[in-house]
Amino acid sequence: MMTDASLSPLWWHQSTIYQVYPRSFADSNGDGVGDLEGIISKLEYLKALGIEIIWLSPIYASPMDDNGYDISDYSAIAPEFGTLADFDRLVADAKSRGIGIIMDLVVNHTSDEHPWFIDARSSTDSAYRNYYIWRKPAENGAPPNALTSSFGGSAWTLDPITNEYYLHLFSRRQPDLNWENPSVREEIYKMMNWWLDRGIAGFRMDVIDYIGKQVDQSIVTDGPHLHDYLKEMHQATFGSRDVLTVGETWSATPGSALLYSGRERKELSMVFQFEHVTQQWDEIYGKWRSRPFDLVKLKSVLSKWQYALSDDGWNSLFWGNHDLPRAVSKYGDVKGFPVESAKMLATVLHLLRGTPFVYQGEEIGMTNAPFTKIEQYRDVETLNMHRLHLEAGLSPEEFIKGASENGRDNARTPMQWTSGANAGFTTGIPWIEVNRNYTAINAERAVTDEQSIWNHYRKLIALRKKHSVIVYGRYQSYLDQHPDVFSYTRSLNSERLVVMANFSARTICVDMPNELQLSGSCLISNYNPIDQVPAMLNLRPYEAFAILAETD
Image (tube, rainbow, N blue to C red; front, side):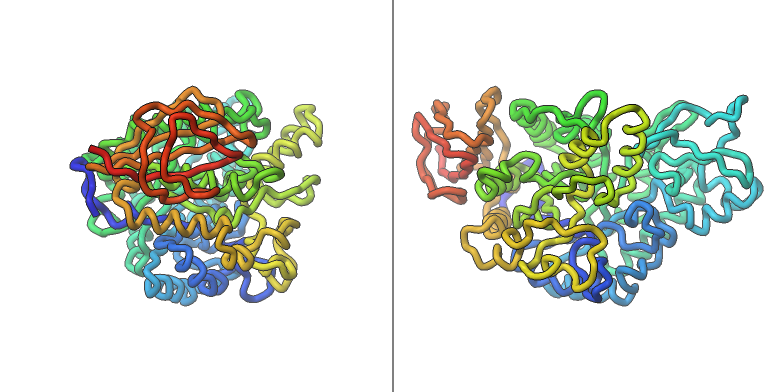
């Protein structure tokens, strides 16, 4: 595969990554919870889609306060998911199909049921005391400072055993590890190598920008030693291995992204940045009250990152994940043009420069959960924020509206496999309700329909493996101020790819720039194929296409 002169090709550059949320993917034993056997049973489905890497959300032993992001044993599998032997079989069976497994690495915090924390809280003289972050109460008995938890309330909880506060930047049952302690880092690196030796393809690193925190200065992300720790981690674990590492970094900017993934730094393969997500949140209420969708702002953010990482680093490309709403519900049109808008979103994302991520169910057009009562939700963040919002005087209806748009459980309803009972996810009672539209939206139906969203994704994934210009071509945006149209090109050597997309439910007439008026081969379209861009282009509702042309 040809590349531009600035970048050495790596195996994951042309791959597409599929995120599996194990609890909601496929249940093999009827207990209502997805498991490793269920994932194994669906490997052929993922191979047929063209997936080469699976990212597994956490499957470690856990009390499941935060659905596995609270780990009580890093070297054990949660019983509801299976056994270590099941995991080894998943890795081997996936590898035989050309698919690698990357694990979710949660090392900012553990569960309060982890043996380290149980010992640490037993006495101020515990050998594990300094594995976590403890502070004495303020003079009036209050928390040491005003740091708040991402899940609401203070980030400090008073432990009655030793009468000191411990830090938890998420749930009170997720105490933060003290990365300033070399013993903590040594234990983590040993654990990482243990998993890498089992043949995994790498790690996705949960809130990795938190590990350098300086709590006494109220510094949570991007602490002064963050990159020292990541360089040390790189040298001690995956640096000598040909694996993929992706960091979750809500605080990342284009400049700091290069600190993580630039060629000279070599800390991580890439990072997830969320600027395109957070720019749509309310300034006061955050994601619980959305701003009106603004395509111009969205394009500005996506283009900024494309330009910033054009010569160095690498972009992660995603619309959704286990923490975000369903893509077609957030950016598309589930009532008027669900299929067309889902295909449009896929086209725009997958033809950008970077590695695309597909969140389970996205490839069949799964939508947000139609929950109307707080009792239907399971997510600890949603339940905590509901209580805090009501205590602040907001109406239950107002909170539910926000949760129905942006709550994390939107992404966690069971995968819709068939039109049968419980969408084919389980023969038991699912741990969270199945979206009631599963009779119309399901994988069984999508795979057999040549015009389905699933087959559109399959074509996009195959195109990335075939055309160097999609992987390495230089990005250039057009029509930046157009409120309804996203337009960009990718150029490599003599090839130019023109991508056009209408983000509205109306037919839009666009006066095309001269450099985009070309003829070529239509690589993909969600309407009839078009092989020429005229001076005046009519884009139908949510229409998207890509034309590949030879230029002088």
